[in-house]
Length: 234
Ligand SMILES: [Zn+2]
Image 1 (cartoon, rainbow, N blue to C red):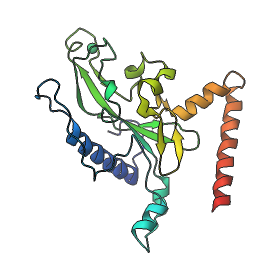
Image 2 (image 1 turned 90 degrees about the vertical axis):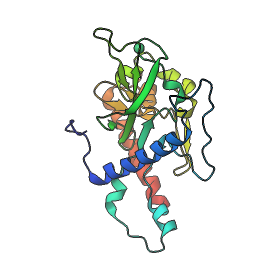
Image 3 (image 1 turned 120 degrees about the vertical axis):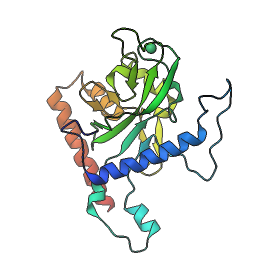
């Protein structure tokens, strides 16, 4: 992890992401069907006292601190924590086909070892962390990739951008924290960068009529507008 110069190395961000990973590991372990189980074994139910949150995780805000402690210790650094989208089979169980050959003779093999990717958002940058899928049919075939990260461009190369929210309905989620609807929670992954669905849809909407500088100006104005709204509410 950390082989990209632009990758965040902030300790707080990494600690926050490690906590998210620990949570997803736990709920996945409690509900997945064991590899040696008989065919058609039903997955275990998740206990009712364990909340299901994600796949977009937003860092806890001031409200959380305030509700859990009457005199919270406010640390400005926590304001800079970025939201992270987890592209994981717990949230998207339909992701198990090999992106190379379409086979279902695959198995999930842990988190992406290169860590989270940066995702460009409309108002703020975001992050995304993927899981690895290994294809048993492609393994050993000369020159073929057989291990794919769900945050890589290769994984999504055969999917059209417009079909994602339909194919993976969880991609349309509503955040109870910000009352914001994340349209198509799975970001759009390119080989060198990634964009949130929100940003991607905005670009598609504006692109035929505007230059890239015009889009940039629109996004700046939208950001300013959001900032003004927040200031009024405070
Ligand atoms: Zn394959």
